[in-house]
Image 1: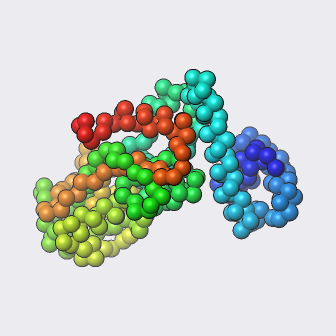
Image 2: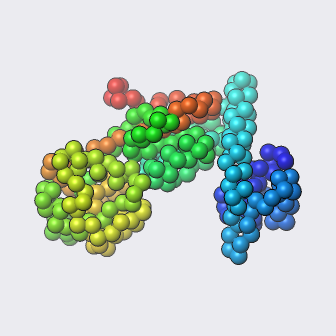
Image 3: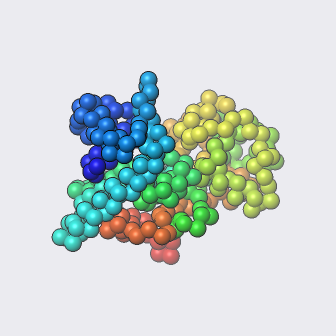
Length: 302
């Protein structure tokens, strides 16, 4: 067993495919299969079930995957530390972002970071807040930016930047000429809501609770798993929703959607830089944290 074999194994698990893993690491499918066979011989158990359309880890494979990711992360940390010792910034950094910061905040920052440090390779995973936090806790991600506060004792968060949500309706809707509606009016309108685990949903729940209201009063017609799908649902008049203003800014500029405030609801929230409380930050990750803080001034400085 060596780190290269573990790297290939993790690629097969991540991509659920021997052929796709081969393309990712520039090896033929038979060579990938040979490396997995060597690992299975080493541990004397099957690690991957080769099904008709997917390659999925067995119970033993899932166990090995957790350790392999930690070992590969430690390898990257060692390479980053040695590069820093020699005055260089290089290596691989695995980041996560919940839907809004992952799509609208982090790409520009990562672009500026890799332009400044061209020997750094950044991998960005986008998922809901709960999944990003779980990935940080498991060690699959070192750092994330999410739109909700975590109550998990193993998570450390710092305020990064403000965001503002708003009620979004299609152009031509009976409210599209207004600037504000009441919560009583909102409760009569078909509403599209995000799925459980979403930072947007958690922020909406907090806003309603602070106003003495419950989201159970909403006339929910659909629960949808992505901001993009909700935007399309609004444009196709499935219902209205509450979304981040930056997520719909292009549609508002194009005249496809309109945004309103809701009387009595504070829809401001924040995005949080999120990492594991008890794991040491790698030198490369610390460089990225310093860089992102230089790009976005702290709340005290604003």
